[in-house]
Length: 119
Image (cartoon, rainbow, N blue to C red):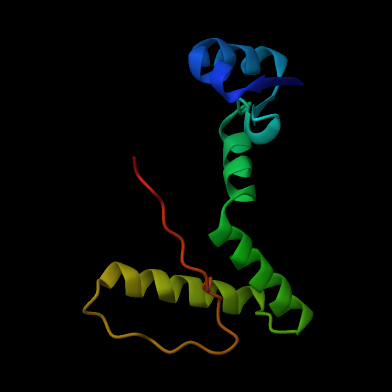
């Protein structure tokens, strides 16, 4: 694992991208402290795992699911798919569609707002 300063990575980004593809992750530091990691995903599945591992909305959803399991608020296989298809039908019908009540416990929606910043 290589360690490089942010200033050096900024000056030679293309070279560092090439290097992380062959040599592995590069820890990027600012004032001697780690602030980022540059790494190349091995494939699309690896990229998806990396992104989900750091996604606050996904982490909140997983925490909610774990809590539901601990408290016994689970759905049978058939009930899960019934609710999933029901929600898909409602979403496909558009915003004017009337919401169909579902049996509790429902499929949890994350309680955390998640916004992206576009630069």
